[in-house]
Image 1: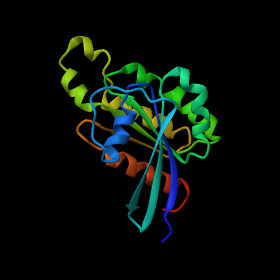
Image 2: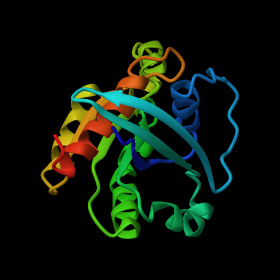
Image 3: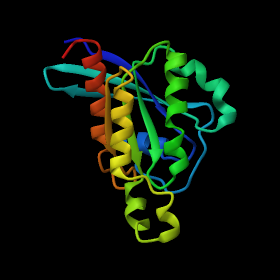
Image 4: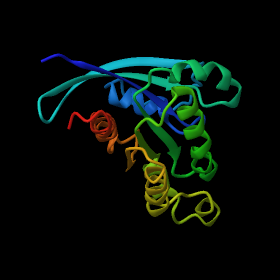
Length: 188
């Protein structure tokens, strides 16, 4: 069987854990220190899906800082799916997801499938009893509602919470996006 190639983008505000998700998914391990992505980073991984579909996921990890916005636009071209990432302990990153979707769909030229990812669940669990941090925490229910709202815009959408640090649902999020891309293409 021929292996399909899916170009996907990892998008979201700076420091939400996009690179950590990619590194964990690629088996490179988690690194606690934050290193800014300049422009975009790139990786490829093969996977086999149910039904005999072999796919290679070409991952474009986009820089989240505003000053890279003009550079990011070219990386969306040809993308077939996106992982829209926010931090479950940084409400502003959640609030900015709609801007990321607008940027993505505008530059991709269409509404591509989305997996909405609430990352850093390990930190949310640590901060849930801290009254100051409670104000910035994004709940599972809020994430699911946003994913439901995105789906109502006419695109294949899923919601998953992850922890790049523990590996929780990292593999599942990339697998889910591959499935959404296949569904959008009518192959499943």
